[in-house]
Image 1 (cartoon, rainbow, N blue to C red):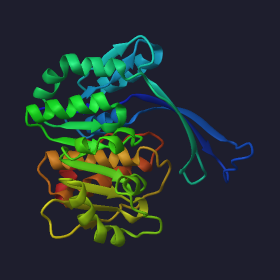
Image 2: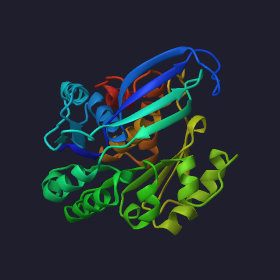
Image 3: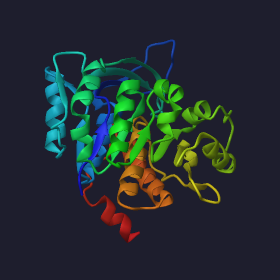
Length: 310
Protein backbone atom coordinates (compact mmCIF):
# COMPACT_ATOMS: atom_id res chain seq x y z
CA UNK A 1 0.00 0.00 0.00
CA UNK A 2 1.32 3.43 -0.95
CA UNK A 3 1.38 6.11 1.74
CA UNK A 4 -1.62 8.32 2.36
CA UNK A 5 -0.62 11.93 1.79
CA UNK A 6 -1.75 14.22 4.60
CA UNK A 7 -1.79 17.93 3.77
CA UNK A 8 -2.12 20.04 6.90
CA UNK A 9 -0.70 22.20 9.66
CA UNK A 10 1.87 21.78 12.39
CA UNK A 11 1.20 23.40 15.75
CA UNK A 12 2.69 23.35 19.19
CA UNK A 13 -0.05 23.50 21.80
CA UNK A 14 0.32 25.15 25.18
CA UNK A 15 -2.31 23.46 27.32
CA UNK A 16 -3.49 24.49 30.76
CA UNK A 17 -5.34 21.80 32.74
CA UNK A 18 -7.51 23.16 35.56
CA UNK A 19 -7.31 21.10 38.74
CA UNK A 20 -10.58 22.38 40.20
CA UNK A 21 -13.81 23.85 38.78
CA UNK A 22 -12.65 26.29 36.10
CA UNK A 23 -13.27 29.98 36.86
CA UNK A 24 -12.96 32.12 33.69
CA UNK A 25 -12.64 35.29 35.80
CA UNK A 26 -10.21 34.01 38.41
CA UNK A 27 -6.87 32.27 38.89
CA UNK A 28 -6.94 28.52 38.30
CA UNK A 29 -4.46 26.07 39.79
CA UNK A 30 -3.46 23.15 37.59
CA UNK A 31 -0.84 22.02 35.11
CA UNK A 32 0.63 23.63 31.98
CA UNK A 33 2.12 21.41 29.25
CA UNK A 34 3.57 21.77 25.77
CA UNK A 35 2.11 19.22 23.33
CA UNK A 36 2.72 18.65 19.63
CA UNK A 37 -0.44 19.48 17.70
CA UNK A 38 -1.99 20.79 14.52
CA UNK A 39 -4.79 18.98 12.66
CA UNK A 40 -2.54 17.68 9.89
CA UNK A 41 0.28 16.69 12.23
CA UNK A 42 -2.20 14.92 14.55
CA UNK A 43 -3.63 12.92 11.66
CA UNK A 44 -0.13 11.96 10.50
CA UNK A 45 0.83 10.72 13.96
CA UNK A 46 -2.40 8.74 14.27
CA UNK A 47 -1.68 6.98 10.95
CA UNK A 48 1.90 6.20 11.90
CA UNK A 49 0.98 5.03 15.41
CA UNK A 50 -1.30 2.29 14.07
CA UNK A 51 1.10 1.23 11.32
CA UNK A 52 -0.52 2.88 8.28
CA UNK A 53 2.01 4.25 5.73
CA UNK A 54 1.78 8.03 5.68
CA UNK A 55 3.53 10.97 4.05
CA UNK A 56 3.29 14.45 5.54
CA UNK A 57 2.93 17.54 3.36
CA UNK A 58 3.14 20.39 5.84
CA UNK A 59 5.56 22.96 7.19
CA UNK A 60 8.30 22.71 9.80
CA UNK A 61 10.72 25.36 11.03
CA UNK A 62 14.50 25.47 11.30
CA UNK A 63 14.13 25.97 15.04
CA UNK A 64 14.46 23.93 18.22
CA UNK A 65 10.71 23.31 18.30
CA UNK A 66 10.66 22.43 14.61
CA UNK A 67 13.49 19.92 15.08
CA UNK A 68 11.70 18.35 18.05
CA UNK A 69 8.49 17.87 16.04
CA UNK A 70 10.46 16.56 13.04
CA UNK A 71 12.39 14.00 15.10
CA UNK A 72 9.24 12.67 16.75
CA UNK A 73 7.53 12.14 13.39
CA UNK A 74 10.63 10.44 11.99
CA UNK A 75 10.87 8.11 14.98
CA UNK A 76 7.38 6.72 14.40
CA UNK A 77 8.02 6.10 10.71
CA UNK A 78 6.51 9.12 8.94
CA UNK A 79 7.72 9.94 5.43
CA UNK A 80 8.86 13.57 5.60
CA UNK A 81 10.22 13.77 2.03
CA UNK A 82 7.69 16.44 1.09
CA UNK A 83 7.77 18.61 4.22
CA UNK A 84 8.60 22.29 3.68
CA UNK A 85 11.39 23.56 5.96
CA UNK A 86 11.11 27.32 6.50
CA UNK A 87 13.14 29.75 8.67
CA UNK A 88 10.13 30.92 10.70
CA UNK A 89 6.31 31.16 10.69
CA UNK A 90 6.05 27.51 9.61
CA UNK A 91 4.62 26.27 12.90
CA UNK A 92 1.51 27.65 14.54
CA UNK A 93 0.85 27.91 18.28
CA UNK A 94 -2.37 27.16 20.13
CA UNK A 95 -2.99 28.31 23.68
CA UNK A 96 -5.73 26.11 25.16
CA UNK A 97 -7.43 26.08 28.56
CA UNK A 98 -9.08 22.81 29.60
CA UNK A 99 -11.61 22.75 32.42
CA UNK A 100 -11.76 20.19 35.22
CA UNK A 101 -13.61 17.76 32.93
CA UNK A 102 -11.00 17.95 30.16
CA UNK A 103 -13.25 20.04 27.89
CA UNK A 104 -11.97 23.11 26.05
CA UNK A 105 -12.87 26.29 27.93
CA UNK A 106 -10.93 28.91 25.94
CA UNK A 107 -8.24 29.17 23.28
CA UNK A 108 -6.14 31.53 21.14
CA UNK A 109 -4.37 30.52 17.92
CA UNK A 110 -1.33 31.92 16.10
CA UNK A 111 -1.50 30.68 12.51
CA UNK A 112 1.53 29.83 10.35
CA UNK A 113 2.19 31.46 6.97
CA UNK A 114 0.69 29.17 4.31
CA UNK A 115 2.41 30.95 1.42
CA UNK A 116 5.31 28.52 1.69
CA UNK A 117 2.97 25.53 1.40
CA UNK A 118 1.11 27.04 -1.56
CA UNK A 119 4.38 27.54 -3.45
CA UNK A 120 5.51 24.02 -2.52
CA UNK A 121 2.33 22.40 -3.85
CA UNK A 122 2.42 24.52 -6.99
CA UNK A 123 5.91 23.22 -7.71
CA UNK A 124 5.69 19.63 -6.47
CA UNK A 125 2.00 18.82 -6.05
CA UNK A 126 1.76 16.51 -9.05
CA UNK A 127 4.74 14.46 -7.93
CA UNK A 128 3.45 14.27 -4.36
CA UNK A 129 -0.09 13.18 -5.16
CA UNK A 130 0.73 10.91 -8.10
CA UNK A 131 2.40 8.40 -5.73
CA UNK A 132 -0.25 8.62 -3.00
CA UNK A 133 -2.77 5.98 -1.98
CA UNK A 134 -5.21 8.76 -1.08
CA UNK A 135 -5.19 12.36 0.15
CA UNK A 136 -6.28 13.52 3.61
CA UNK A 137 -6.78 17.27 3.31
CA UNK A 138 -7.11 19.87 6.04
CA UNK A 139 -9.36 21.99 3.86
CA UNK A 140 -9.14 25.37 5.56
CA UNK A 141 -5.39 26.01 5.24
CA UNK A 142 -5.92 28.31 2.27
CA UNK A 143 -8.09 28.34 -0.83
CA UNK A 144 -5.01 27.89 -3.03
CA UNK A 145 -3.80 24.82 -1.12
CA UNK A 146 -7.25 23.22 -1.29
CA UNK A 147 -7.59 23.99 -5.01
CA UNK A 148 -4.22 22.47 -5.86
CA UNK A 149 -4.79 19.35 -3.75
CA UNK A 150 -8.19 18.65 -5.29
CA UNK A 151 -6.93 19.45 -8.81
CA UNK A 152 -3.99 17.04 -8.67
CA UNK A 153 -6.03 14.34 -6.90
CA UNK A 154 -8.63 14.49 -9.66
CA UNK A 155 -5.90 14.42 -12.30
CA UNK A 156 -4.46 11.18 -10.92
CA UNK A 157 -7.68 9.56 -9.73
CA UNK A 158 -6.94 9.78 -6.00
CA UNK A 159 -9.67 9.97 -3.36
CA UNK A 160 -9.67 13.09 -1.17
CA UNK A 161 -10.95 12.97 2.41
CA UNK A 162 -11.75 16.38 3.89
CA UNK A 163 -11.36 17.49 7.50
CA UNK A 164 -12.49 20.94 8.63
CA UNK A 165 -10.30 23.60 10.21
CA UNK A 166 -11.94 27.00 10.73
CA UNK A 167 -14.54 26.75 7.90
CA UNK A 168 -13.07 29.73 6.01
CA UNK A 169 -12.43 27.77 2.80
CA UNK A 170 -15.20 25.22 3.32
CA UNK A 171 -17.94 27.86 3.35
CA UNK A 172 -16.50 29.83 0.43
CA UNK A 173 -15.67 26.86 -1.82
CA UNK A 174 -18.39 24.25 -1.49
CA UNK A 175 -17.46 23.11 -4.99
CA UNK A 176 -14.20 21.72 -3.60
CA UNK A 177 -16.02 19.79 -0.85
CA UNK A 178 -18.30 18.22 -3.46
CA UNK A 179 -15.23 16.71 -5.12
CA UNK A 180 -14.10 14.90 -1.98
CA UNK A 181 -14.76 11.23 -1.23
CA UNK A 182 -15.92 11.90 2.32
CA UNK A 183 -16.54 15.07 4.33
CA UNK A 184 -16.09 14.61 8.09
CA UNK A 185 -17.11 17.35 10.53
CA UNK A 186 -18.56 17.83 14.00
CA UNK A 187 -22.11 18.95 14.77
CA UNK A 188 -21.15 22.62 15.21
CA UNK A 189 -19.42 22.67 11.83
CA UNK A 190 -22.31 20.75 10.26
CA UNK A 191 -24.80 23.32 11.56
CA UNK A 192 -22.89 26.11 9.80
CA UNK A 193 -22.22 24.17 6.60
CA UNK A 194 -25.79 22.94 6.15
CA UNK A 195 -27.33 26.13 7.64
CA UNK A 196 -29.31 24.07 10.13
CA UNK A 197 -29.94 24.75 13.81
CA UNK A 198 -28.75 21.59 15.55
CA UNK A 199 -28.96 22.86 19.11
CA UNK A 200 -30.70 20.23 21.20
CA UNK A 201 -30.77 17.71 18.34
CA UNK A 202 -30.18 14.04 19.04
CA UNK A 203 -28.23 11.69 16.82
CA UNK A 204 -31.58 10.30 15.65
CA UNK A 205 -32.71 13.80 14.64
CA UNK A 206 -29.55 14.23 12.58
CA UNK A 207 -29.94 10.76 11.06
CA UNK A 208 -33.36 11.79 9.73
CA UNK A 209 -32.38 15.07 8.02
CA UNK A 210 -28.79 14.30 6.94
CA UNK A 211 -29.59 12.33 3.72
CA UNK A 212 -31.56 15.19 2.18
CA UNK A 213 -29.00 17.75 3.32
CA UNK A 214 -26.13 15.73 1.82
CA UNK A 215 -28.01 15.29 -1.48
CA UNK A 216 -28.72 19.01 -1.65
CA UNK A 217 -25.03 19.82 -1.25
CA UNK A 218 -23.95 17.10 -3.70
CA UNK A 219 -21.77 15.26 -1.18
CA UNK A 220 -20.57 11.73 -1.93
CA UNK A 221 -20.53 10.84 1.75
CA UNK A 222 -20.54 12.71 5.04
CA UNK A 223 -19.99 11.94 8.71
CA UNK A 224 -21.13 14.22 11.54
CA UNK A 225 -19.53 13.53 14.91
CA UNK A 226 -21.62 14.33 17.98
CA UNK A 227 -19.41 13.64 20.98
CA UNK A 228 -21.10 11.44 23.57
CA UNK A 229 -23.95 10.73 21.13
CA UNK A 230 -21.60 9.07 18.65
CA UNK A 231 -21.56 9.90 14.94
CA UNK A 232 -24.08 9.99 12.10
CA UNK A 233 -22.97 8.83 8.65
CA UNK A 234 -24.52 8.88 5.19
CA UNK A 235 -23.29 8.01 1.69
CA UNK A 236 -24.79 8.67 -1.70
CA UNK A 237 -27.21 5.96 -2.80
CA UNK A 238 -27.91 4.64 0.69
CA UNK A 239 -31.60 4.50 1.68
CA UNK A 240 -30.94 6.24 4.98
CA UNK A 241 -28.24 7.47 7.33
CA UNK A 242 -26.85 5.41 10.19
CA UNK A 243 -25.64 6.05 13.73
CA UNK A 244 -22.26 4.91 15.04
CA UNK A 245 -22.31 4.64 18.85
CA UNK A 246 -19.47 6.15 20.88
CA UNK A 247 -16.86 4.08 22.74
CA UNK A 248 -17.11 5.10 26.41
CA UNK A 249 -13.86 5.94 28.18
CA UNK A 250 -12.48 8.11 30.97
CA UNK A 251 -12.00 11.60 29.49
CA UNK A 252 -8.67 13.31 30.19
CA UNK A 253 -8.46 15.78 27.28
CA UNK A 254 -10.96 16.11 24.42
CA UNK A 255 -8.64 18.01 22.06
CA UNK A 256 -7.60 15.83 19.16
CA UNK A 257 -10.73 13.68 19.36
CA UNK A 258 -12.07 14.92 16.01
CA UNK A 259 -8.70 14.43 14.33
CA UNK A 260 -8.52 10.89 15.72
CA UNK A 261 -12.04 10.05 14.53
CA UNK A 262 -11.17 11.38 11.07
CA UNK A 263 -7.94 9.36 11.04
CA UNK A 264 -9.61 6.09 12.00
CA UNK A 265 -12.49 6.55 9.58
CA UNK A 266 -10.20 7.40 6.65
CA UNK A 267 -7.90 4.48 7.44
CA UNK A 268 -10.92 2.18 7.36
CA UNK A 269 -12.20 3.55 4.06
CA UNK A 270 -8.76 3.25 2.46
CA UNK A 271 -8.64 -0.39 3.60
CA UNK A 272 -12.00 -1.07 1.94
CA UNK A 273 -14.31 -0.86 4.96
CA UNK A 274 -17.90 0.32 4.63
CA UNK A 275 -18.71 3.80 5.91
CA UNK A 276 -20.42 2.22 8.94
CA UNK A 277 -17.35 0.11 9.74
CA UNK A 278 -15.00 3.03 9.11
CA UNK A 279 -17.01 5.22 11.50
CA UNK A 280 -16.53 2.51 14.12
CA UNK A 281 -12.76 2.64 13.61
CA UNK A 282 -12.94 6.40 14.05
CA UNK A 283 -14.94 6.10 17.27
CA UNK A 284 -12.43 3.67 18.76
CA UNK A 285 -9.44 5.82 17.85
CA UNK A 286 -11.14 8.94 19.25
CA UNK A 287 -11.89 7.08 22.48
CA UNK A 288 -8.25 6.05 22.83
CA UNK A 289 -7.12 9.63 22.23
CA UNK A 290 -9.34 11.45 24.74
CA UNK A 291 -8.18 9.12 27.50
CA UNK A 292 -4.68 10.70 27.38
CA UNK A 293 -3.13 14.18 27.42
CA UNK A 294 -1.57 13.86 23.95
CA UNK A 295 -3.37 15.10 20.81
CA UNK A 296 -3.05 11.74 19.07
CA UNK A 297 -3.80 8.08 19.73
CA UNK A 298 -1.37 5.80 21.57
CA UNK A 299 1.04 3.56 19.64
CA UNK A 300 -0.94 0.46 18.61
CA UNK A 301 0.41 -1.38 15.56
CA UNK A 302 -2.13 -4.19 16.13
CA UNK A 303 -5.15 -1.83 16.02
CA UNK A 304 -6.76 -3.29 12.90
CA UNK A 305 -5.84 -6.88 13.78
CA UNK A 306 -7.65 -6.56 17.10
CA UNK A 307 -10.72 -4.99 15.48
CA UNK A 308 -11.01 -7.92 13.09
CA UNK A 309 -11.26 -10.23 16.10
CA UNK A 310 -14.22 -8.38 17.62
